[in-house]
Image 1 (cartoon, helix red, strand yellow):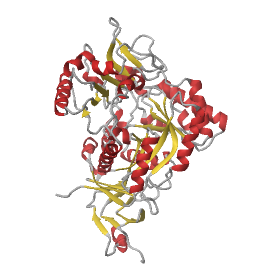
Image 2 (cartoon, rainbow, N blue to C red; image 1 turned 60 degrees about the vertical axis):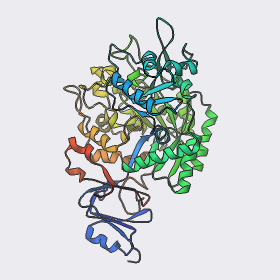
Image 3 (cartoon, rainbow, N blue to C red; image 1 turned 135 degrees about the horizontal axis):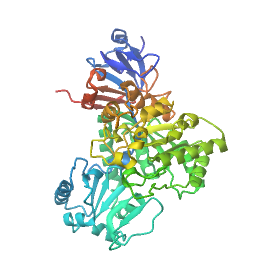
Image 4 (cartoon, rainbow, N blue to C red; image 1 turned 90 degrees about the vertical axis):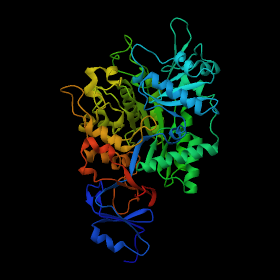
Amino acid sequence: MTHTADLLITNANVYTVDPANPHAEAVAVRGNRIVFVGGTAAAQAWRGAKTEVINASGRTLLPGIIDSHFHLLWGSLRLEDLQLDAVQTLAELGEQIVAYAAANPQHPWLQGHQVRYAIIPPNQTLDRHFLDRVVPDRPLILYSYDIHTAWANSEALRRADILHGRDLPPGHEIVLDGVTGLATGELREPEAYNPVRALIPEPDAARQRHLLRKGLALAARMGITSVHNMDGNAEAIAHYAALEESGELTLRIYVPYDVKPETPLDVLSEGVEWRNRFQGSHVRAGSIKCFMDGVLESYTALMVDVYSDGAPGNRGSALFTAAQFNRVAAEADRLGLQIAVHACGDGAVRRTLDGYAYAQRVNGRRDSRHRIEHIEVIHPNDIGRFAELGVIASMQPYHAPLTVGTDDVWPARVGPQRWPLSFAWQTLRNANAHLAFGSDWPVVNMNPLLGFYAALNRQRWAPGDPDQTQTLQQIIAGYTRDAAYVEFQEHAKGMIRTGMLADLVLLSENIFSVPPDEIASVHPVLTICDGRIVFRQNER
């Protein structure tokens, strides 16, 4: 043989996700491509004097993880703020804030993230008065884990001039006290908390790049080699492109052009310019992203019927009217752009599907691969429309409560009558929908093995509910081959096949031998992106 491999992984339990050749023992990499997939004995022919040989010792080798719903820069910029995901009570929340404030006297503004709604008891509130008692002298804002609700103290509200409220677009709310008429401190959806956030000094470019490198290192440690970003602006994509140019980008990123209800239709041509400009090996564009609704936890998701535990008649609200979204969908589709839409409630899912159907009627059918993000609940009449319209179901297993016996408020919002249609992974799969999986980091932990665990161990919420659990093979495909298809890259990645990009992850165990309830303990020991080792666990 005239050529040898740069990297040779042998004695592995290789799960290729390639239907034509699902299992192997060894993989050889030269440059940024896979050049051999087969048996360990045959792989020795690729071994040369400079070949790095890794003995996998029976551990599982997979294609690199493709996270189909991610916020890279946004999540990275929060990494050194106050993290509150482990907080269980309001008292503990207060203690954490006090400790962080004392440890960071240099910060003129304080920000905290990952607050869980469940820490607020039914008979108590998280309001500005609570926050004032904890931090009276500096502006403070906390964000819920899903980033659809924020809570600010009085100083932050005063500086933002929203203590007395403010007119906002539909679907956004500065919650007011019914007695005093003043803001309680609860801010629902971005337009409500953006007046506060706009006052917080942005990190300079150097610090943003520093935090972005931290986020990239974290993703590499998790085995993630590609992400579908779910937010995009000129500043962010410039950061990614600069890191690609310098060789520092350790994953591939597909970046959308953000479109809001007020975005003029002619501006969508900028999405086309992005697509033409960003088609590198690591940074790509070619899609737009919209928000149709909020989330069920704050009653801002659009429902077909009323919430089970909300105010009488409350169905939530939408950010786009049906006519608005139809126009956006038709124009983006005409321009050849892929469309991704956040839609949690069944009403939002329906309105998005209606828009995609309208675009097909206006423009004709094409291989658009438009997608809906989250789909936390779906109406039975809309299940079959995904396959009919060729729409991708982009879902995040770790969002779903494993059971209704937890302190998660989500199941109460929809009520038992809608539990069979909640996080309906298998129901959609049975209706021939194409599924792809992701995390929604930083809304939840980016660790894909937590998503594996959730999809494997989901329980029926009530007797007679459909079983929505996924097989390990379905889950792996959802994070690899099926996710590559969603971004039109199934020819290049998502499988371990000769000629494909060398994006790989070696796990700590033979994952197929690990009991489902222990799957979250599995972790990557080696991550390879573009033929380069971007993470290696230190052996002890």
